[in-house]
Length: 501
Image (cartoon, rainbow, N blue to C red; front, top):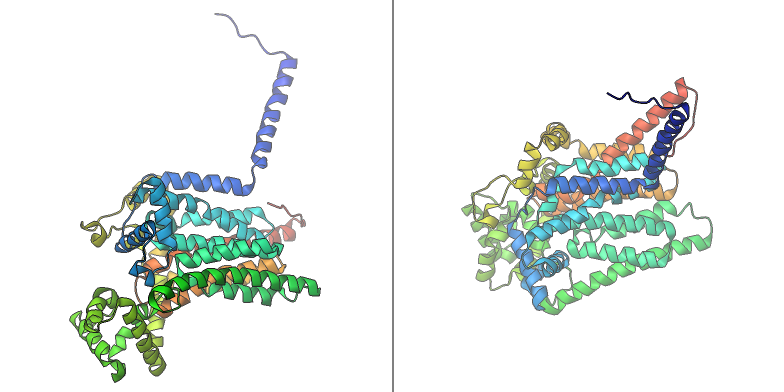
């Protein structure tokens, strides 16, 4: 057997130089990819790993959105547009146009592709708050730890696209405000308009963002030119959004005679006022008595009664549903002004339910009314619960957060504390402070609008902003730990060197 010849000293030296050189080049290649690139890669792989085992989870409202998509395809007005804006139906129309009509698998894939970019959008927001990329990276990646936000991508409802576009609109707003370029103001206003067309409940948040920008940034602007530039930027931004708002409201006005983006408010608020509808004045006696009679048939249950029996009241009063909704708006106004205690009691209960109500029926269970079959576990949940990797990753949040109502009730307070910490430890520039305030403010705006208007399906309605606050809490924890470690290092090691990562 031939003996292996030993390497010469020159060969050993060449080998010892080769491997460190190879490692160095590999590390340079890794460093060449920006952090957001690695975050996008991780998000894409994780989404593919989970959602390749999922199927679309249909709901009754999916059918309503599909009918509106057909109306867009056929170029016809549909009465459903009085209650729903055209953003999500148009998204369905484009997806069906490219992938086949009623191809809800394609809708799920399209939503998953958009969802893949959410961690990067969050990373962009956090980079304005902190100079450290790793802190922003942790905040963005934390979105992937919320299985409900990922599961929402399997559901053909407007909640996902609403949540995605509000984050996109927020990124465009703060980065555009940082540049103060007017073309960016126009682009940011267009994205705000798209979000409005998907879900009009955010229609006032853009004004709130603009006012917050004035309050937090005005004092830091020294020259008159800088202040004028800020005012011009905000004027263009809000002007573009207002144009989109007015355009769609004009379409509704042409068909109904009412200038408004949606005529849903009166119907929705009966989920609150329905509890004391019998107190309405005799001016509305016909509608009042019919409503109370329908409520008593359901053992006093007033939740979603307009959806279930509004057509009966509409027929009895010779009204369309949108006309009945406007009449209920008048009744609701009377009841709230004359019985504010009853209404505020309902709102208080709604606030609690919003934070603690389980979202499993959206992502984990099929809907019998949409499928025509008994309720079953979704393919998404079966994979997440049975796969050892996903089960190990998500079980901790399941046990410590989602299954603990007493912890979920504390989330709004945690958000306030986290905001204070981030404002204290983050960047001192106004854009950093503004970004942190707008993230938390947008979450609370969404919550307040829904608890003041709705009294049902909070497990569904909270999902558009759940990924936002879930991610922000992780980011604030990372910021706190970074500050604590730096303090300990300064105390015991005596160095204050900073790593940009």
